[in-house]
Amino acid sequence: MKKVVVIIMVLLVMLVTFYGQVYADYIDPIERPGEYKPTQNEQSNNTKFIERANLVLGIIRFAGTFVSVIILMVLGIKYMIGSTEEKANYKEAMVPYIIGAVMVFTIPNLIGMVYDIVTKSIY
Image (tube, rainbow, N blue to C red):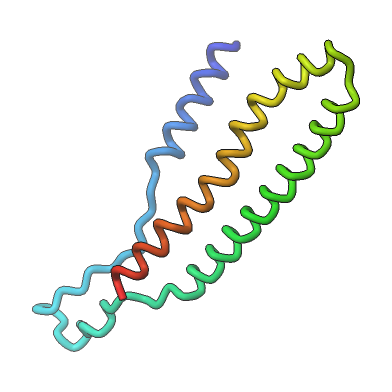
């Protein structure tokens, strides 16, 4: 019974994965010359998307910085107050924290720098 359920699940996942619906319509300018308008092929203005992406990036930067600073303060206070054994445990706990904090600070800033470079070189 388990094999049948697994096989059905795999088939359903494959069906969902490979199924695609296309809503495009090809307008042949030779058959229907009145319906083809080249002005419809202009690129859309993506200012709303860029504004929302900047808002999300700013929220991620702020939240990451805020959480990192709070955790660093808590770990620092616990390290200062703790005994010798606790200090050794906190030193071990600091390594993943430092790696995570570096990632939280660097990744959004790198994305921001790449965005600035791309937008300045285009305009």
